[in-house]
Length: 292
Image 1 (cartoon, rainbow, N blue to C red):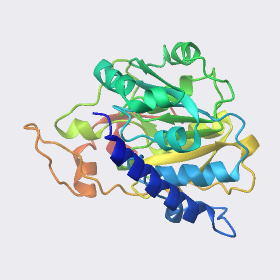
Image 2 (image 1 turned 45 degrees about the horizontal axis):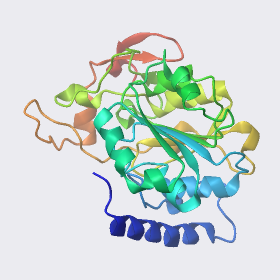
Image 3 (image 1 turned 30 degrees about the horizontal axis):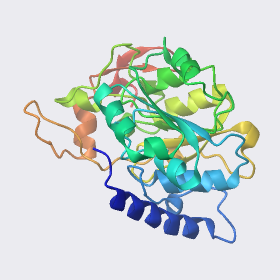
Image 4 (image 1 turned 135 degrees about the horizontal axis):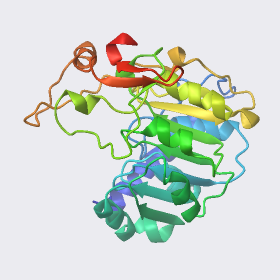
């Protein structure tokens, strides 16, 4: 459901206070860390990391596209939209979610477009062209709990200055692996396979280097990696996947009855060791355990 107006104003006000604290450092860090994080509308501390990056690089286009926003209550780009008047397009695979977004106040108060689409490698560029995206996009956020690596790999129509992509910390910091591409992949809601989705941070880093991006940060929750195009890095210092990697603490596994399993990180990782993944460097597919 849409955020009640008073709650939205409070969240944005808190974000403004936090943002001033982050940006008021006399010597902003060249290496972004957890000290830059704050949460206004993002799921974790992404709002703060984004603010710190935007402060440090010359943004050519205040535009964004975000995949996998659900109802846009928690999203990486909502603070940019409402606080900084960026414009952009959000895309989700649920028509119901898109309808909720279109009925919300943010949809008429700002230059926001919402589109229902199930994104695949085959259709993503067509969707972006249909969204009339600026080729020199300011920010692209990918969080679809599945083919994230393959979707970013397939994008050629835009060259965002900033890319945020979800990674699966259960795949470890070093193995460059992703789930094998399956255009119809939909993350299971129950059982151990619910935790086998997406790609490792090393796989995303490998792709980023191919596309001309540097990894500049990972969030403290251990699920999002931040990349900046090499031609606008400025004095931001790139980091290695191992440096940015964090073991996720959130326990979102479900048993076959739908109950939360509360497994430790090690237990969650062991439960998917036999799941098939693809090494994006060698293109070899095999059980996750053989790559860890």
